[in-house]
Length: 234
Image 1 (cartoon, rainbow, N blue to C red):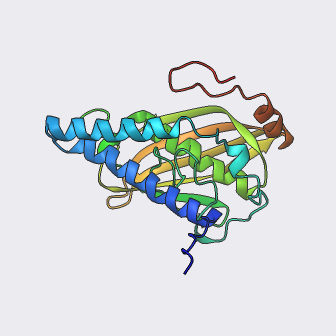
Image 2 (cartoon, helix red, strand yellow):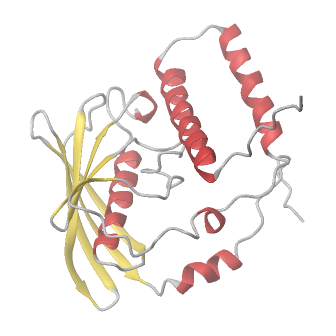
């Protein structure tokens, strides 16, 4: 009787595995910051992570241009709750170690992201780091670009903080197009605490419209990533 051959993993298998790992890394971040640990536990954690990192660095380079070439860039976000296919997107990507686990919704031409910030997001005691709020706005503004079908880069982002950004309380980040003047796209939005309605922060941004082909040129000019010892790859 011949030995059974394990089927090769599909693209869906890889995506599911990466999503699980991304979530595990995010939870690890919050557990490491938000919970006490013994020196033995910390040393064991370091050994496991260092070992996995040593296994990953020799593998072939992986970049966004490789993994999202098949994503339909003309996708139209449906009304109500929606998801997106760029899993590695730093703030809203479900595979990103830096993700905020956003719950995304479209209301007309506005985008709303529901989010609960946790231990690893703490800046001043008991409140979120302001840079986390800025990153949240910048990322969610990007979905408005999808609504208006326009590729663009962030040109300017201004955040006004009206109140302390609480941890462990659901927040709503709601953003929209204000107006467009040539290549300049003006966006605005607010961050509120859902349970109280308190205005936490407001934001204005100017994005600069670009030809989508520019992204392909930038990818071609991208420098090689460093090796694990810090030297550039050949």
